[in-house]
Amino acid sequence: MNEQDIIKKMRADNFVKNNGVVLRAINIGRKSYNRLSSLCGALAPEIEKAEFTDCINYLSESKYIILRRCDNKQPANFSDNEIVDLEAKVSPEGIQLLAGMISDPCVRA
Image: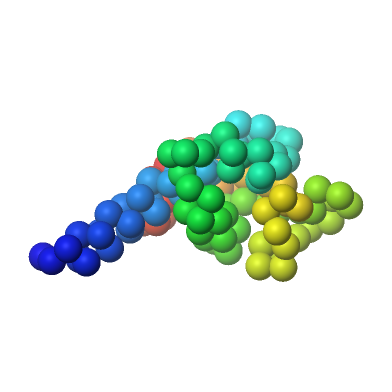
């Protein structure tokens, strides 16, 4: 195993761990939406902004979180908006994942 292989494995492991941390952080609000910019700041420096962005992208595309715009409360797509404009809450699928009813190899819940 060379240096690049080790770095790839570390990043992959961090991604899986970070997805679980971010999902649990979003779940802190339970039924409320949480501003992504506030969560990103709260998780720094353990999770860098680029890593946080990767997690939000994965969790939203996997339907584990629900995103909406902060200003008008309308549903939002992560790829069309900036983090500072969005808030999130855990979806029913995300709750099932956190409860251990379903599993995802990319989320350590």
